[in-house]
Image (tube, rainbow, N blue to C red; front, top):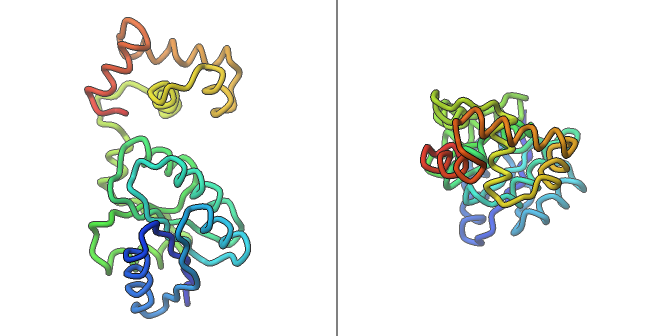
Length: 201
């Protein structure tokens, strides 16, 4: 089964290297290379490659948002190639239906195999990444509570948190209160401090 791949990387040299690397593996064909996340989205919407490989630093939320949009296109699957894999980004990728995330430090053969597996319909997140997504066994928060905490950490007000998570404002406020209570914090500022210290966000 041949796999058509779109490569996105902001850096020209890195983009060219990834293109040449993947083209060198049997069954993989790079059909396009995009220099921005939005160019990748536009290409994917027009041409529907089998897999879109999106390279990013690991903290760029705009790139993850674009990956989420590509992930819902029919016949098009998304694989993130991350320099760093932070817990919030891994959790978000898992929850959003992104098909995989691999580290830029992985061997080339592992990257090529991840592309093939994603094309076959598998989700490819290695154990280290899924362990990171759990935020450690001592975290008392649910995935939704962690999402609320991460949005608070970004500085989003409660109305914006409610809109992003498709909640009513009252429910969003209840989540904030539940987070503070579950963590044994004095208030939301104390909860954010504790979460940062424990690397939950």
